[in-house]
Image 1 (cartoon, rainbow, N blue to C red):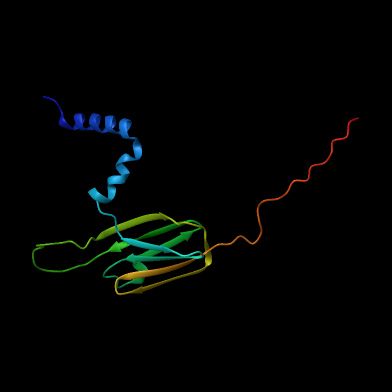
Image 2 (image 1 turned 45 degrees about the vertical axis):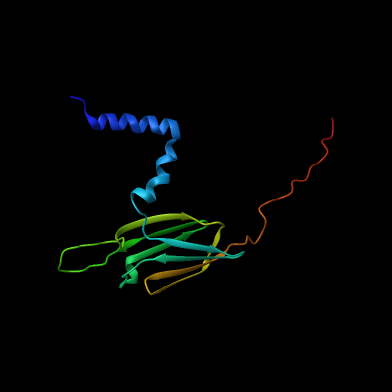
Length: 145
């Protein structure tokens, strides 16, 4: 008897070679919805992130890290309802750990996050370099000996 799982592994390998390794990552949000859900808005010098984290009663249960052009968010969405049988459960919950690339580098000294009505409002500001890292190299004439 043939093992259906080995056939599935072969099938996935064939699909990977046909579509490329990253093909499956495009489906991640469809197969397994991503939490927390995030809206990101950009102006010329600012980024506003609105992060949906319902039922957050302890603000220490969410960690937000910003590193240059990366935003890391981790924590737990826990909507606990004791008693009764679940009939419908559409509000996504569980442990989350997301990394999001930002459209430009942001300042580490000027960021603000506020939580209201189940949403985290995170305001980030563009990092402008104090000095250009581009230095002119002086070309000197090589004297022949």
